[in-house]
Image 1 (tube, rainbow, N blue to C red):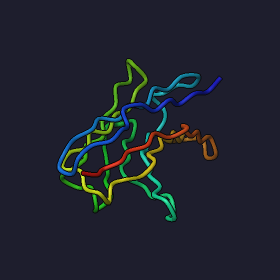
Image 2 (image 1 turned 90 degrees about the horizontal axis):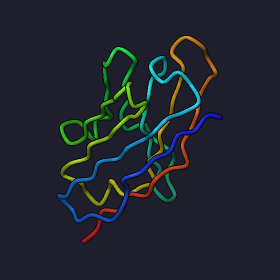
Image 3 (image 1 turned 135 degrees about the vertical axis):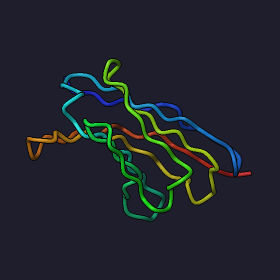
Image 4 (image 1 turned 180 degrees about the vertical axis):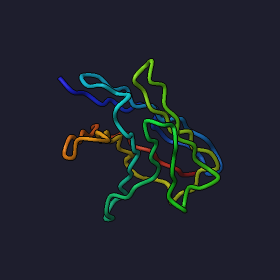
Length: 118
């Protein structure tokens, strides 16, 4: 059974930091690109950061220099280190797994809430 379980969300003050984790199971993690998306109330889901099996990563412009995505294939886990958080970062953050050679093999986590507020 495929599972993606996010954790690490919560309430943080502006300028603070959080580290999100996404633990994967039920598939060959190392063959999947791992992506963090987010969705704020009333807005569409948007890509935050992606890391490929090679370790190459890419970021949305609005998080460059503040967020860092990483992965640990031995633990089948992807992380998102979020620094210098802003109120605009408030959203539900979702973990996504996409097989790099097999189109359509895509899995989603249930999401974790991040709230940036004083």
